[in-house]
Image (cartoon, rainbow, N blue to C red):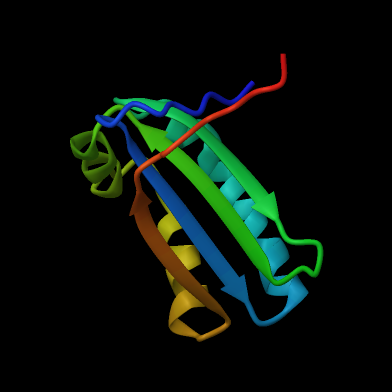
Length: 112
């Protein structure tokens, strides 16, 4: 079960990857799936969820960190090996576009 914390000290990151072709989105999705256990081992990691749009154009990744410093440290980590350069290749070719934004959670509700 993914945890979403409304704690103001948390760092919530939402990444939107938009791809020009379903095949590219499929490759990006595989990269994201391979990154999940690596994210989980990073210091300060709380949770991650990935969502693929039903029209096969976007992958949205939701990450929460204990604080901004944990997120920043993850971005500098070498733990991702060749996964980062593969994703960068899709971005550099123009086949994929990445939008990363940091958000504040303003509310959370769960079913009882």
